[in-house]
Amino acid sequence: MLSPLGYHRAVLAYVRRVDERAWTALRGGPAGRLDDVLLRNAYRLEEAVHPEVHQAGRRAAEALGVDTELEFYQVNGQPNAHYVHQAGTAVVVFEGSLLESLDQDDLTAVVGHELAHRVLWNADDGAYLAVDRLLDAAAGDARTPPQYLETHRRWSLATELFADRGALTACGDLSVTIRALLKLQTGLSTADPEAYLRQADELDLSTGSRGTSHPEGVARAWALKNWLSGEDMESLITGPLDIDAPDLLDAVLLRDLSREFAASIAHAEGLRTDAVATFAAGFSDPPGPLGVPASAGLRFDEPVAVRPIDGAPPPRPRPLVDATKRYLCYLLLDLATADPDTGDAGLIASMVIARRTGLTAYDDLADDELGWSDKRRAKLAKAADEAIA
Image (cartoon, rainbow, N blue to C red):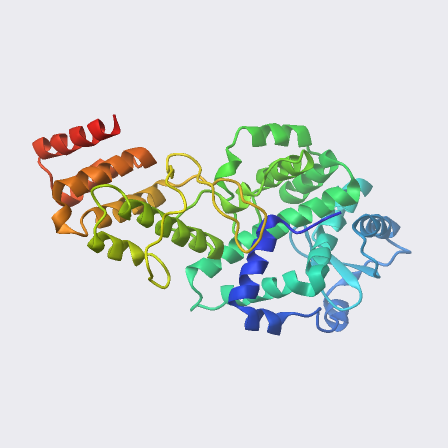
C-alpha cells in the first residue's frame, strides 16, 4: 500500500499549523472537468483501437486501488506522459512517440506513475492536494520567501518519488520500472536497468538531488531500489543541512540548533555571564529566559541528529555543509566577544567549545575577524588544547 513520504507528512503538518487558513481555503477535490479542452486539443485513445493502453490502465488502477473510469489521450510533443486531475474520470495524456517504445509492462509502469498522483491528491481527504496548490501558488509569486520556494522544489521531488513507487506497485518489477523510466528519459527503445543501477552506485546520492521538479533519473532508480529494500532514501530530498538554502522545515531546525548551541555556549565555564546569557537568549523566538541546553554533546563534524517536525517520523541525522558550520563559528565568536569582561578566558573557552563540537575552522575565522598576532594565537590555542587535555 502506498503512503506519502515522510517529507510529505512533515510539510503537511507544518503548513496546517502555520498557514491553516490558506491551506483550508485550498482544500477540496478537483474542480470540474476538462472534457472540452481535451477533445479540442488531443486525440482520445479509445479501447477498440488501442486495447493495450486500456489493459495497462486497468492493471495499474487495480494495483493502486484507483476505482474510477480511465481515459487516455495523445498529443504532440516530446515523449512524455502526465496526469490530469479532474472530477470523476482519471485522465492520462501521452505526448510524442512515447507509446511506440513501451511494451505492455513498461506501459503499466508509466500509467501507474501517473495514477499515483491521483492516489496522493485524494489521500487524507485532499490534504496533500491543498499543500501542493499552496506551494504552486507561492512559487508563482515574486514576493514568496526563499524557504517556500525551496520547500516547493523538495515537495515536487518527493511527489515524483511517490509516483515512481506507484509505477513499481503497478507493474510489480523493479527492472521494468527502471526500464520504463529510461525509455521515457532517453528515447531509447531498449535499455539496461541493471547497468543504470550500477551507474547509481558510483554516485553519493545521499548529498541530495539537484533537480528542480524531478530528481535525476539515476537518483530515481537509486531511490526505488532503496525503498524496495527498506532503506532510507529521503536524504535524496533533503540533502545536508544548508543555511544558504533551507526549506520551511530546515528553517525550524536551524533555529532550534542555533538556540541550543547558544545556550550551550552561555553555560560554558569562562562565558557564564549575564551579558553572554542575554545575547544567547536572543536566539529564542521570542527572546526569553535562557534555559539549560537540551544537549551538551553537540558535534558538527558528523551528521547531527535532528528532532522530527510536528510529529513526523524521526528524520535521518543530517550532515552540515561548510556554510552552516561557518555560521555556527560566527555564532560562537559573537557570544565569545559579547562581554568584554570575559577577556582571554572567554576566547579560550570558545576555542575549547570549537574543538569539542568539531568546528575546525573556528580558530582561523576568529583570527581573521580579531586580527591576532601569531604569538597571541599560539598562546590562546595552547591554553585551549591544555584545557581539553
